[in-house]
Image (cartoon, rainbow, N blue to C red; front, side, top):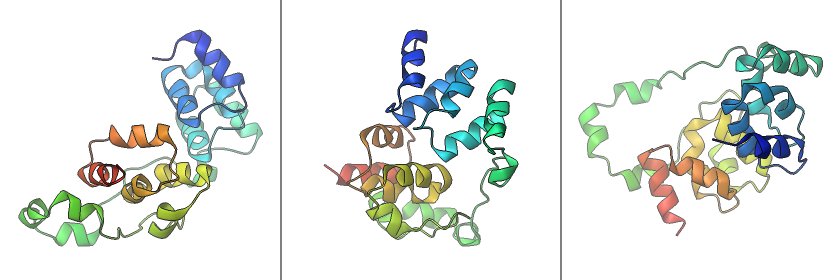
Length: 171
């Protein structure tokens, strides 16, 4: 948990770590408005705050034109693709995790992010956006040598075999 003094300092720091800002917004909703106006607050975090933040945070974002509806409505769980539904579970279990990690994922996000972008971009904000909006491309982000350390750490905590194999290949 981020302590109060560290949270106050981080939301006022124009160079704050975006992942720390997300953690602060999640753990301390009263800081949501302050996180939302920080220049390092990425669009996915603003969307999350616009949907789940307290009234003050949602009002602050609305003044800047950010609402949950402006970003495609409420966050919803992604439905499995038809290809994944047709593949038998036994066949999925037989597929080695390392092999699955390096197969080109099918980009299913509505934002137009591609596997090539996830593997090659050097733009840290774009990397954060891909991680937020295109979970199917997270293994590619894990392989991108430009992915920042805090995101690498977060990806490692997800427990996804494909991401873990991609992270292991970085060493």
